[in-house]
Structure formats: C-alpha cells, structure tokens
Length: 260
Image (tube, rainbow, N blue to C red):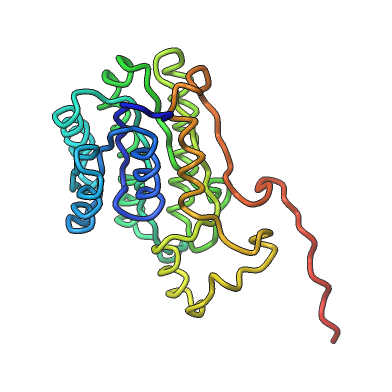
C-alpha cells in the first residue's frame, strides 16, 4: 500500500472530492483526519473507517480552526505526514453581487485557512518530511463571470502553493491540483440552481467534455496518491491541471453561424 501508516489531514472530507480522497487514502493504508461541518455525515463516514479515522467538525472561517484541526490530529494519531487543503467555499457571485462581507468569507476559507493550516502543521510535516497538496480549480486562470470571488481565491491559492514550495524546499513538498469539471453532489445542486434540467449530467456536450461525461471524484483521488506518497519525495512546486483537455490556450472549433 502506497500510503501505509501515513497520517493525512483532509479538509472538507465528509462529501464530494474530499470524501473520495479519504476513501482512497484509507484504502492505501493511511490514517485520516476527517474534517467538515456536518457532524452526522462525518460520523457516518468515520464509522466506516473505524480506528483508521478521527473526525473534527470545525468552520474554517474561524481563524483559530487550523490550530484546532492540527492539534486534534496529533491527539488522535501522534503524527502528521500529509495535508490536503481541499475544503472551499463555493458560490455564485459577479461584481455587482459581491459585497465586502462575501469577498472576505471567500478569502478566509479558500486562502487564509489553507495558509494557516500549513503553518500549524509545519513542525510535524518537517519531522515527517511530509507533503502538502492544495486543491485548486481551473477557474484560477480566469473563471466565470458569476464566479468572481471564488476564481480570485483559487488564483491566490495557486500562487501560495508555488510560494510555499519555494520557501519550504527540502523540508516539505507542496504541490497543487487545478481541478476541472467534476460531478459531485454539490456541483449537481449548483447546476440545478443555474437552471439546468434534472438529467443534465447525461447531456454534457463535447466542447466541455470530450469523454461525454464529467470527471469522477474517485479519479481525482487516484491522482493524489502519488503526491502524498514517498514516490514524489523529490518533487515540489508542481501545478497540475486535471481536466479533460489542455485548459490554458485551448481554442476548440467554433460552431458554424446560423443562416439568417
């Protein structure tokens, strides 16, 4: 098993991609610190893993949450080998709809919390020659009009990953995923709010999905194992776009104009 006896903290791990990370890490021999805000869901997942998991319910908008999460990990397992900064605030907002309060919430959860989780975990990660994996989004490059603060936060997270990789080189490796369109329960929910029909995942067009389906959370989780394992021990500062096509510079064939 590629993560045998490693202890991995995974924020936002009671649903979606975070849950897939947790399941894959446990299957690879790791022990995991589950984190989320829904206690019932978190306890159900932790119950499946038995003594391979501990659970913390905490709100990353609270500046004290990173210290509490790391402390809970050390109490439960006595060490910390890896940190996946996966949790993120997601919501629709363009310039007109973005208030100071909303912007600050996005920055607190999506940038401040990952940074201070790294800071809180750093002594333990150095001792383990461990790894950080930050989970960003292809929206870091530009984003949608109605994803303004979210996209800004993911751009900041990408810069932070590269900065930390440079600063911590030789001590802790820091790598970064820019994740594309993944079919999670939350994504399904948001697209329904956007006005998509109930069966929208069955009708994703080739321009956005050459494989005629969206990426599965389990496929993102499978990609994470290498970056958390000792197989990648010499590699830091990588930013990987996990999408179905080359995201930057892509210029797919435009449809023919309609006849007037």
